[in-house]
Each structure stands twice: as C-alpha cells, then as structure tokens.
Length: 352
Image (cartoon, rainbow, N blue to C red):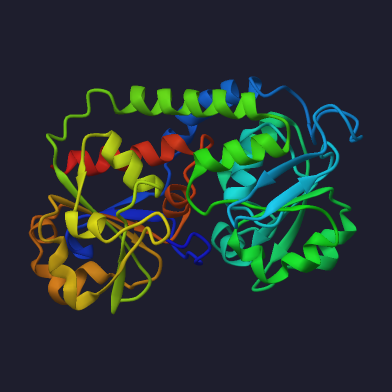
C-alpha cells in the first residue's frame, strides 16, 4: 500500500456492487470525537505547549548519539535537535507529533491537499495534534520532488522522511542529519525517532498505551477466526496482497481475531510485504470470508473480471476504502489515528 498515492474521494463503501453499496462518510466525526479524548490524554503525557525539542541544542546531555535508520544508514546527531523538519505529512509527521514535538516545517503532499480541499491543510489527526500541542509549523507544498531550498531556509537541525528522501539524501545531508523512517512500522518509527530526540522512554510508553487501546477497542469482537483478504489496487489490471504483519492493516485485523488469506501471507516478507498479483489471479482470494480493498484509483476492481465471482464479493462482504482520509489513515496507522482504523475492522466484522 503506497500511502503517497493521490486520493479523490473521502468515503468507503460496503457491498458487492456500487449500486447496492452503502456509502459512509469517511472517518465520520464519531471516530474523531472518540479519538480526540485519547489523543488529548496521549499528548498530555508528552508535555504541553509548543515543543520543538528539549534541551539547549548543545553537545552533551546524551549527545552526540548515533542511530541506524530504516535505510541502514548510521546517522550521527551531534546536538539535541531543536528544529525538526518533516519532509512529508506521512509517517514522519505522525511519529514526530505523537512524540509531542512540533516540527519547524513539514511538507504537504499536493495530492493530499487537493483531496482535503485546502493547500496547506493536512489530515485531521495531524491538525488535532497540532491544536493539542498549541504549535505552528511552516507548511510547504510537496510535489514530485523535494524542495531542498525551502527546507534549507527553515534551518533544520534534523530532517526526517520516508524512502522518498533517497534521491535527495546527499543534498539534505548538507543541511542537517537525515533519518529515513519505515514506511509502515509505526512502532519501529517511534523507537527510532524516540532515540533521535532523546524520547525513547516516551516512545515505549506510547507503544504500550496504543497496544492497550487496541486490545480494549477490539475486546469482545467475535469474528470466529474468519479469514480476511486485504488488498490494495491502483488500477483494474493488478493488485497488491497485504500479507506481512509489518503492515498495520494486517497486524490490526489479526489482533481482532481474523486470519489472513494464506496466499497473500505466504508470499509476503519483511522486505516485500505486499506481493503483486494479476487481476486474472483474483481466485487467490477465494478463501476470504470478507474482502477489504484499499482502492487508490482502481475504478472499482471488485466489480471486474474474476472478482465478481469471489464468494465474499458475491455475498456482499466487501469493505472498499476509496481514496481519501480513511484509506490514508489505515496506510499510516499511528497512535494519532487509531480510532479511525479500529472502526474499519468493526465494519468488516459486522459483515460476517
């Protein structure tokens, strides 16, 4: 599931065919009202008021320190970061805000801004966290390339981004240490950035708290070991099978008591967590009791070809997460948007 894929509709549909589907407003205010209570408590545990970082940015007090990032690079951070820049409003921004740090700057992907309808606005869980922290950040537009000049103007002392920084890494490293985070593993990201910002204890507490919230929210959800097929599609010719536990959707559905389609899990590894399938091989999903589709522009893959003959589709046991806030939230699951993701699991369970 490639979170940076642009989205165009903020809704997810339930049902086998669009004509029969129930359209539900993406991330109904109910999820965010519930989540705001947990978010406020979470942020409160990270300190109050705008916080770029702690300390005076000098050598000493635990610095310099070296961390190994997701690209396998050893990153030396000489001083306690005071001006953290996030390249995008994805896993990097989720992680930093969850740790209670307001970045001096973050990039807003153009596709996201178009969907949200505001050029400088990010996802609601980001806006909620910024409001709770009372902080402000410079927001810069992020297109196909990284605007290193705008980042340089912010004078960051630490730059955080996902694998999208690879092509610009040498340029960015001339400005400040660069930490590349994982694309899906929110726990690993909290640990990594917690180390970089000298907030590892806080990161560990946050992970434990979020896992406890997951367990409490999923308690009593009786799915009877039902099998879920989790796929992402960008067109009608092929799809990605989500099968590795490092992908948040897989982890969360398994925690809820679902099993995942064996054909998707067997071919998935930590390095390649989402094996690719031709749409002609849709029958690998035949064992799914319920199908969850992250539809990043496939124009309704479940209504085409062999998908229509799948038992889950024929029975109307399909959750389609169309391009928008819900699909993106599940792609970048974090402590900030957990309630949105839990709601998707509940909706899938209701179809059984």
